[in-house]
Image 1 (cartoon, rainbow, N blue to C red):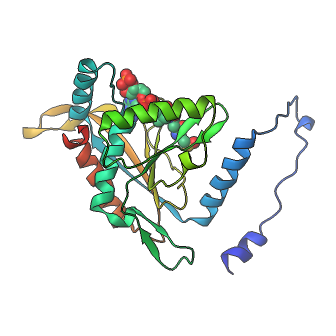
Image 2: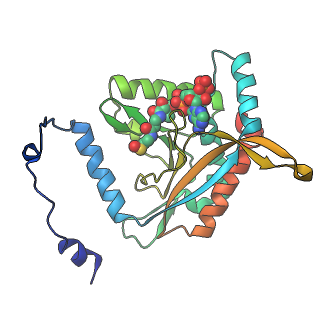
Image 3: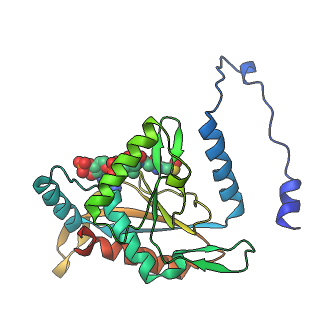
Length: 250
Ligand code: CAO
């Protein structure tokens, strides 16, 4: 049975009068929720998602970020911005992640630019502004652009050009919590990196001594039609290694 036949044979969606069971209140979804929900539903059923989980030791990164933020109170850096710099390095090292399937589904289009999308939580729903040419911008410039776009997304909404052309998306729940999740790929991109809260945990150090390290959980969903599990594991490990280095601060 083909996938389409299977979908056609699914039982109908349950129709319920919930008021039979207790008091209820009905509210329409916002236009944006309906629009974004349609895209999310399409991507979830049309793309064979696999989510790879790993963690990065961000002990030094967070120390450097804190030092930077104290010295530069007007040019503060947040974790999503440093993740964008790490992702640029990842896309350069693993070009198959900086690609999209073409219209026929039989070929790949490799991109030579490095535009990163950021999922932004807004009162009306989820929006994904794209910051262009992150390879050419210092982390502080990306931070300023992200802050401006996130404010605009929440107050006025974004234009289609401001949400178009992304190569890969970051979705960060780290300021809230969580240990892992399954982000939905933002088609026609091939992968999305989810991040949850960094936690300190004991790691076996040199000579067997216990060392407390700050570990950042990474959840990479990828399109398994194009990317295989071994590449996803290498890509995520590479991102984790980047987060331990100095280069992403430039
Ligand atoms: N672990 C621990 N703390 C973290 C963290 C992590 N992984 N990530 C962020 N934080 C902390 C930061 O340290 C920061 O505090 P300081 O200013 O003291 O350093 C604080 O949380 C805020 O960081 P942030 O992640 O919100 O940074 P930002 O303002 O640059 O983020 C944006 C911008 C747009 C990513 C964010 O506002 C947002 O909307 N996130 C939600 C995205 C979302 O909803 N994704 C789910 C989509 S699927 O439905």
